[in-house]
Image 1: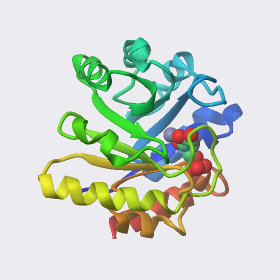
Image 2 (image 1 turned 90 degrees about the vertical axis):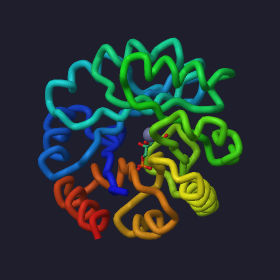
Image 3 (image 1 turned 180 degrees about the vertical axis):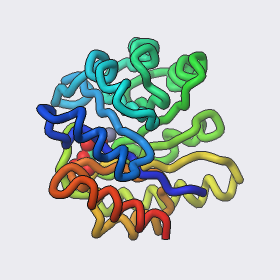
Length: 218
Ligand code: DX5
Ligand code: ZN
């Protein structure tokens, strides 16, 4: 299974968003991770469709949209229309995850289901065969720059075992508190899609991406 790096633009300098996306693109990020927050599912508000639309022309890299919004089915088409290639929603944010998955697939996009640190793996087991990706949050969603919750890696291990046992092809994404100096341990736990915001956009962006890529390919 291929390891993938997804750069979370939440930690970018928004005054230089275009050039910073070009920089992660050139340095070799695989995906662009786009965090959408509604001030309800999480306390903060980030950005929405107009931003996605205006950055779509900058790069051909996969747009990995992480919806931290209540009742996500309402906005799937909007994000697809502005260029999302993959849409991940939270299990906790909907009464009907299967309907959201079907809605994403209706537009031919990849579907991901996410769980917060307190939500057990059991909550997404019924959807494992239906999605392309499971996102195990390694921090409480809502803000960049937090510290990884070590117990969340136990869930990654549990999920990796389950996916391998079932012999299915599902990506395990991790998001929050991931840096060059702890990513190895996270890969070892069984994750293969690595999201990083502060770990990429703070300091030398190109060097950070290249170092992550090197570790991910080893
Ligand atoms: C948090 C977001 C993350 C965030 C990660 O709610 O889902 O994608 O940008 O930022 P870092 O890597 O700084 O923890
Ligand atoms: Zn995210």
